[in-house]
Image 1 (cartoon, rainbow, N blue to C red):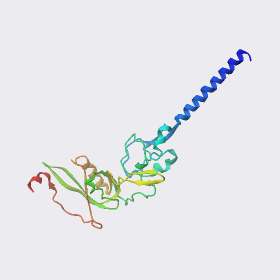
Image 2 (image 1 turned 90 degrees about the vertical axis):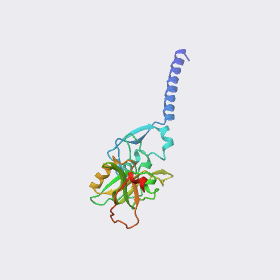
Image 3 (image 1 turned 30 degrees about the vertical axis):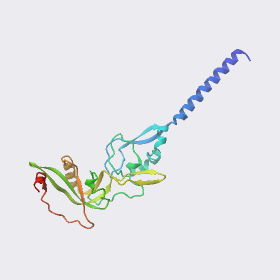
Image 4 (image 1 turned 180 degrees about the vertical axis):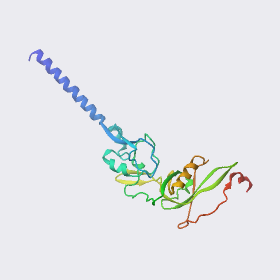
Amino acid sequence: MKPRQLFVIAIGLGLVAVAILQVEAWRSRGGTVQVFRATRTVQPPNTLKGAYEIVGIPANSYAGMTSQVPTTELERWVTSTPVVRVVRPGETITFDVLQKSAAPGPQIAPGMRAMGIEVQAAGAVGYLVRPGDFVDVLATVPDQTMLVSKHVLQAKRVLAVDQQYRLEDSAFLQRSTYSTVSLEVTPAEAEILEAYRGIVRSGFSLSLRGRGDLQQVTTPSFPVSELGKR
């Protein structure tokens, strides 16, 4: 075989080797996987419809998140399922953001609204509050020249709590703690909660009512300045 022919063959083999290396490099990276990312804040129990974008992440990065992050094959379910906690802009959507698929979602009475408030363990009666319970909402707020603790709303039905779910072995697992409680309120009461949200000193608290106890009560509102006098 002539040297020129050998040279051409060598170049050809070299090009084939480069192509194989490029293909293997792509395979090692695994390409990309399409997932969902929030584009604006979404409050429970709303859905992500119109509030998300599809982004690509490296498949090798996704490999460790397959049980936590849904892909575009589930787009219809993801966009029609209520969220169970506040979703922030730029957040990658995970299964635990979304309500358990077997649950029908909170049923809101005609003319009523769902409103989420932030709570902590003590403020949620040690996490005893559950959907279907009735609670009073309390807050400590400025009142003229002093701080007072008062009932903001009474006998409001709990629609949902920030119970988070994740997909694992085709089953949803539920957490026992949460940071948000969604209440069924009138439009006027929703405005009241939003107004108080900006001035409460230590967040909202809930007091849990007994089953069937929906009676409105009159309270004097407790002045914080009286704490040392009783």
